[in-house]
Image (cartoon, rainbow, N blue to C red; front, top):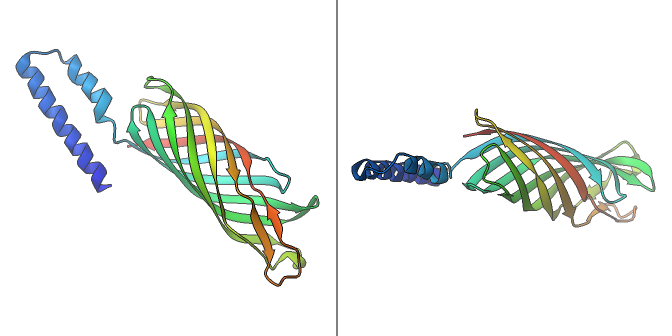
Length: 212
């Protein structure tokens, strides 16, 4: 954060020097406005929440729910670094029988590229890396209560469109494919067989953010 503040102050000083130089040289004020638009907004942050609708791509889970808190940092006019973390809950099935719920903390970091120079609507695409920290398995079946789940990692591809309002509120709607490495559900007593499961899925994402 301190580095961001220093960069912002440096940019403001550059804008000031540039403006003074324009007044001295008699250049038009449009040059200053263009400079501001191109450089002075390069340190924006966005804080938001993300709601998703998910479709598992493997047969191990019947339903997946995710809730995200998001932080985005604007690198330049057309690229954003986005961090997401939250809660993932996946309903596990064994031979089409509902068994229990895997609870995990997904963490991802994505590079998002804007596909237009519009200040209002921006189509985008991106790539991200993810880590899924599994912290619990809930079930009402006694034979599954001793199952432990390992954590895993993966990657994602995303695309969509983003709307930026004049009041620094942004709304984005996107589609992403999230692929995770299979992880194990292991019986710590060694009675039940180890199960290799996959939580990969498609997601439709709706994000509401406030820009700073």
